[in-house]
Image (cartoon, rainbow, N blue to C red; front, side):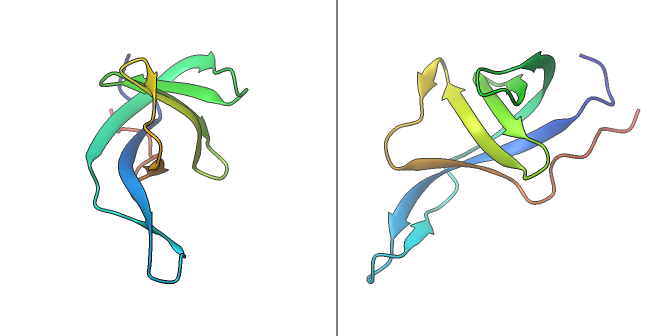
Length: 92
């Protein structure tokens, strides 16, 4: 892939709950940089890949719609979130 393609940094975190049961996100366990593949995923959103991860991302809402890590679904209780600063095309 060449520079200038869209990319995202995806954070993998456990989802926990506070004392009252409200969802919280635990510490970041892994950050993966994924780049556009030019294909659409099964969800219909653009597919991104990198570092053993394939993710379908809705670029409008910056939501990870589907993800596999090393060919497997995320473990129960984990969430995949787009890092705040990612999603900009690389200069080049």
